Structure formats: C-alpha cells, structure tokens
Image 1: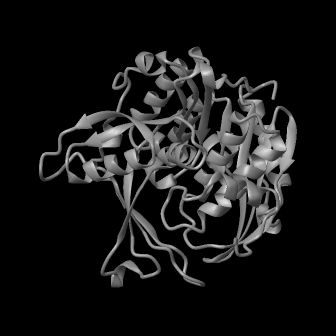
Image 2: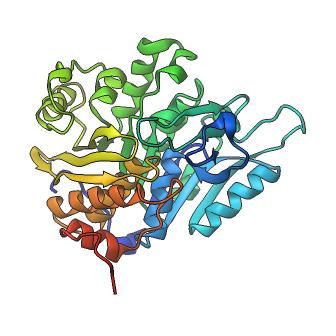
Amino acid sequence: MAGLKLRRPEECEIDFLALGALVHRLDPGIIPFRRAREFAIHVSGGEYNVAANLASCFEKRTGIAAAMVNNGIGELIQGRVREMGVRSYYKHFQHDGVRGPNMATVYSDCGQGVRGPVVFYNRANEAGGLLQPGDFDWAKIFAGGVGWFHSGGIFAALSNTTSQLIVEAMEVAREAGAINSFDLNYRGKLWDALGGLEQGQKMIGQIVSKVDVLFGNEEDLQMGLGIQGQDVEKKTKLDPDAFFTMIERALEKFPNIKMVATTLREVHSTNRHEWGAVMWLDGERYVAPTCQLDVLDRIGGGDGFASGLIFGLMDGRSPDDALRLGWAHGALLTTFSGDVSMASLSEVEALAAGGSARVQR
C-alpha cells in the first residue's frame, strides 16, 4: 500500500473522524407506513454509521462532527452516539419550538419478498444544512492527531455550504497527515435543489480532488463524477469488469485517488440478495467472493462494508484480507435491524474466512 500512508495509532488521538448529518430513522419493520401503528427509532447518517461501526465492532477511537439541535430528538440522538462509543463535536442549534432547525427524519420500512423497501425523508429546515466553513475548530480537533477523515455525498448535497465545509476539513486533514475518504452516495433529488446534475458534479469534483480513498458504485461514478459508463443492462451487476473500467476513467480526471471500492449487489427479492465487493488499490484489482444473503434490513450495508475495509487497512491486513473484512461486515449488517453494527470482530473474521451460519455451541 505504497500510495496510502496511514499514520501509526500511537500518533493519533482519534483513529477515524467523520463529518456528516445525524438523522433519526423511523422504521415500522415489514409493515407499510400507511398501516403502521408503531416504529423503531434508529440513529443514523452515512458518515456517522462508519464511525459507529468502527467504534463498536472494531474498537477504534472515532469521532463525528455534526449539527445538533437542543431539543428532545437531539438528546435522543446524542445518547445513542454516546452508547456507540463515538466522540462528538457538535455545532449546536436552538430549536424555536415550532419550525426548527430540525434533526432530519428518515422514514424507511423493510419491505418483504416482492415488495421493496420504501424510503422518504423530511429534511425541511435541517440543522445539518446550516453548517458552513468556520463552524468547527479543525486545528484544535486535529491537533491531537487524526488517522482518517471521512465524509459523503448526501451531506455535501444538503446546502451550498456543506460541500465547502467538507473541502475546508479535508484541506486541514491532508495538512495534518490524515487519509481523506469520500462516499459519493449521489442523490439526484438533493442535488436538484442546488442546481441539478451540472452543479452537483462541480461541487463533488472539488471534494474528490482532495481525496485519497473513494467509495461509490457505477451509478455514483457516472452521475457524481461524470464518468462515462457502459451498457450494464446486459451484464450482471456482480461483474466487476465494468466497475474497474470506470475506475480507470475516473483516475484520468482525478489522479490523486489512490483507492476506490464498492459493493456489488444483485437483488432477487427484498430478502434475497447476491453480495460481492471489489477494490482498486495502487493499480491492483481485488475481488471479494460472492455469497447469497437473506436480508433482514438492507439499510447500512454499504457503510458496514466501508468500515470493515477501513479497519482492515488500519490494522495492517493485506488488501485481500481487508476487502474480505469489509465484504463480511457489510453482509452481517443486513442481518440486524437498524443502521449500525451489532457484530463482533470474531464474527466478521469468521465469515471473511469462509464461515457459515451453523449453530455456534
């Protein structure tokens, strides 16, 4: 891994720091919202999920920089963040009792069989979208040493200022010797409110020019970076060739990128998926095995993959082993209700090594 220069743990106060929006997700399970009587409440956020997984499953020292609203929902979210062992760096906002600012609400059922999951949002007057450069004292946060900095495309698309905040943080992170990573997570509906595809690609491009590690699937690369794709309709979604071809094109635009990784998923029904993963690192291609998943809740699987892979790299595992840890941890995430890990490192390592679902006695 000559291109990725990870700092030694003893040099860092924080192994992994994320910047993103914390949300609460209302989950009625397999019941459609139109008939729901009760909900489970999950605390989530694409960037936070990676930090929470690294802390809870992999025992890494992690942090989250985010907006926080001073009301009961904010208190609930803060409590869950503490439970996961994630250090918090909050920009606080006072709720006016009526209109906000608010912690965003995600509504997401699990679907079942031939009925797919339904996801929709209320991000009106979201506190996360109010964040802007200057809201965090990055010099102070990075002063004790940070090994890895991470953010994502959903947070970048919340407002005209959040992408600039990511750029500001990444510039400090690079100066401090941290790895910069970004999950493209292109969401057209969010970018439409900020000027559409052209503006989204411009803002994402500014961020990606600062990154070392990129997470994103073929659609993310095509929509988020303007990379020409192939006719994937005639190919299985588990075929890595199209993805590796697009990576080569992405590197022509962004030669600073040292690693790109993604999951490969073929959905046969809501509860039956085929699951794989691929990684490009320093010019080498790596492909994880393919397995069949019996899915309980698909939300968070990609973040589970990223966290397992990042742990493997931090822990000095070989690229193949690191990829398999990400693949295994992402697969395990789909067996839990909620967005963050309930797995143990031993479970992840067992599945990565070829373990099965036989009863453990």
